[in-house]
Length: 398
Image (cartoon, rainbow, N blue to C red; front, side, top):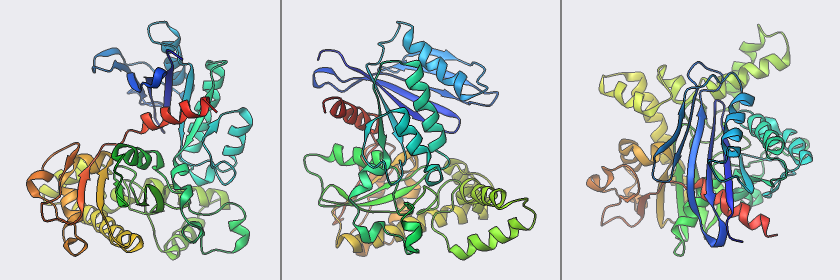
């Protein structure tokens, strides 16, 4: 095997991100990356840049739908200006109870994963659509699904099992977790000396936290869907079920059907809550920090709710791990918002977590714990695409 260009696809609600890695002869070199942004809006962008950061494509096309957007990517990769992929890896949040392993994609597999769209309603339909398009537009090229839930498959049954009637458990309702590829990439980067007791906080517009014991997931904050766990940009995180029942009954007063009421409740808990709902302003931490400086009390409450919730999860995971060797921050907020890191760690001295204010005043990878901290605290950016490439290469050899 000499040259092995692997395309990685990561689709979102209004974007398709992609990268191509050279994975032949044991190499793992990113050749280029790009994105189609603003799908379904008047602000479409299509760009590709090489490993040095030079823009090779920089367009503002009309992007009325995902089909047009993904065809731009396929046409570019078929143009001869870039190495055509010999394999494609797709990120998927959750494949449901019957698809728990990373594997080669078939039309039948996509059908099976679509049965469990409700487990990741904001992600699964888009990911499945892109998988079908990739099979069509890259005929003969093997496609592989890489699941976020794959990393969390090692959680013990007491963690995975929901306190609900067994008839619903039999339908696959349990805790799956999310951001697993990000967590896997942190463990990968810490090799060969992975701390025995590790907590990783993936903080961004979607946020979660995981307890990792000897390199394997012991527990994670997100549950059946990415809506659970920590308060996120627009998601509630964990919440009293009675609150959902109250909101549902209010919605049902004007809804035309049970399905419409459920859809409206989904919009409330996944798109209108979290930092956006509490602040009444924005789901972007940068906007909220600016608003706090201007004295906005709602923004202050939203950020306090965010950092307080994460500190609580850290405390519970330290108890679950029976100690802690390292805490890692990753994700957009975790890497770039030093104020959030400081506020999360404030008051955790009893757990052995002490930040160094000067070290913490950075963006990007760093050791930010104080010399007298019993727990190492680090900032490590995730390498999700690289992990997907690693899985693709492994699966091709099986």
